[in-house]
Length: 315
Image (cartoon, rainbow, N blue to C red; front, side, top):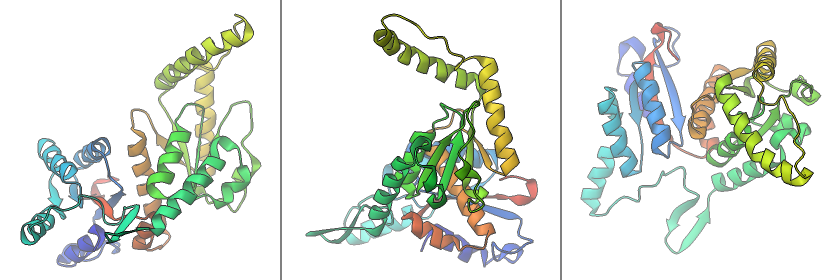
């Protein structure tokens, strides 16, 4: 039973909110799957603290579970460990240490110690990665209609690494399109068959963007000087006025087309990937698509849930 199902059962015991689908329910559940490292976990706990949320988690990794408990305690975040007590009890009863691997997130399913069977989620992720590499950096706009997620954004907002993480960890087919001030976006992006809910526009603080672009120019500049025999090319790539117009152009497009804007400033790639996964599940739920089916399609169990008060206007 996933954390989502367990939570639904628990809610049924309370008259104020016996089901999450009731319109008068003042609680909102945010689901984060594939929480596999301390950095991502810390980001989720910070969000739970900011939203005065209850943190519910089903982490199989004992070290990560222990860190979650300590971080929640230090951050004054009320938390419930659904998996830990059960694993401890079974470990004592069976006189055997648990494997510490997520049950629904294994690339190898342990059915027979002598046989290793590749799971369907493994093949799904391989397919997703292959698709994502083909559709990287706007190289195959005709694939946009087949993508699960489309990332758009100006240069140096981390579209490619984020695309790869979404494909590897969540089994999502991702296409990414660079938005360049002087170049129109591919016409395939505006095809009526493209659902705007699956398009994410990455934005970033202009100061941070300038820093990243300057570093990029420094690295590429040394190589360029070698290739041109010491002749240096002048560019406005990291010019503040230019990048401000570049960012405005991207934001205007997102607002005009109804794309979701995601600020990646200071965010780890894994944290941004988890946020996008959360947003997709919420959008699917709004379209009456069963959540559990989406989790199964992602190839993993729910690792963390955050419940907060909707009446306070928090996400």
